[in-house]
Length: 118
Picture 1 (cartoon, rainbow, N blue to C red):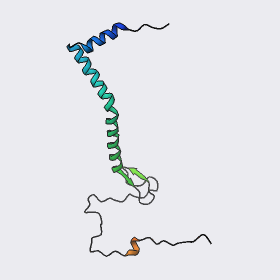
Picture 2 (cartoon, rainbow, N blue to C red):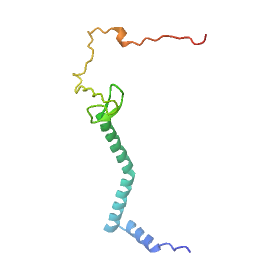
Picture 3 (tube, rainbow, N blue to C red):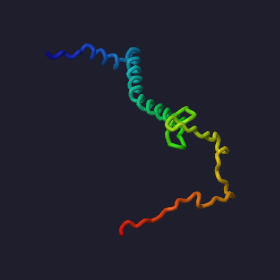
Picture 4 (tube, helix red, strand yellow):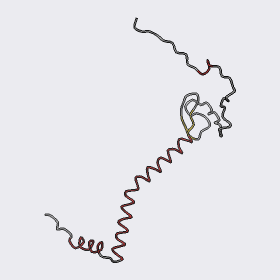
């Protein structure tokens, strides 16, 4: 057996929405706020997740020995070697200056060609 349509509530909602009375304006404001919240909530959650991921990535430290990444530890939980102290400012990092001579053998990769079609 089908239920009849609630015409009374439909007409009451239409009168409240169409009538220029404070109750109609309040109902429109509430419905508009709920609609904006539903539409903007995924965007806000996505932005918050992106910011949290960026903060998490900055706090991760990678072991120079085994490559394991961890947060907030002084030594690697995988191999036990201590993490290297990272430089805090760009001036502390060792960057070769323009006048410094660098041996090319230290910065190039030797490649040997092997012909396997014999």
